[in-house]
Image 1 (cartoon, rainbow, N blue to C red):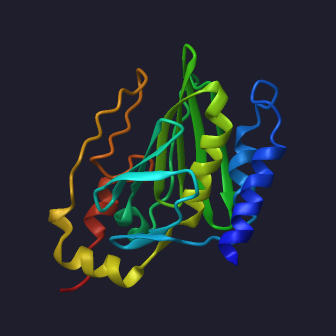
Image 2 (cartoon, rainbow, N blue to C red; image 1 turned 120 degrees about the horizontal axis):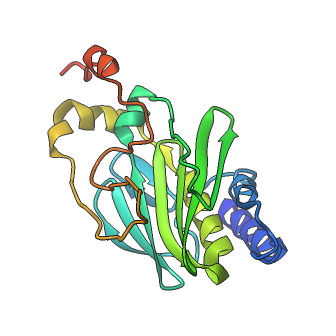
Image 3 (spheres, rainbow, N blue to C red; image 1 turned 90 degrees about the vertical axis):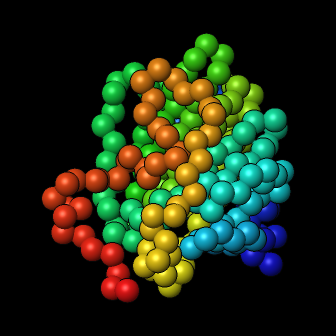
Length: 212
């Protein structure tokens, strides 16, 4: 029932969007996905999430997933360490962004950033210790932003599993670097923890892993 409701809301959202050339309020596409109850249909190590209809998972590397929709690759990274330590979200706007807005849903914070390269748009959406990035042309931008937001909003963490992972396998995280060309100045790297969360040296000294 929840899946049916979510799907109907998703179709309504897409049908109700104005033309991307006239609608520059991209953050509203993200926020609208918070109005529906989250459901899940896939699971990874320490979290579960929802893969919408029309999105195909093509790679799964524990904390990195690659999806395909409209011939566009969607890259998901989930940062369970920042989630576990409840690190604060940080990002300094460079002023070179084509579009940038922050948003919040309860105590969950995030932002959407779009960089333009000719007729191509590079989109980064960070929300609740997870991140999605993709390239898109103008015709698919609204749809991919909405699909990505549905996926990010659905992520549900399993505290028990995450604690056990950190107890015994912290040094054994899968390290994969996706070969994705990034715009000049982009510092994102999927093989590392999200740089958007505070990683101060003083905090690292104070933080300890769960007792073994």
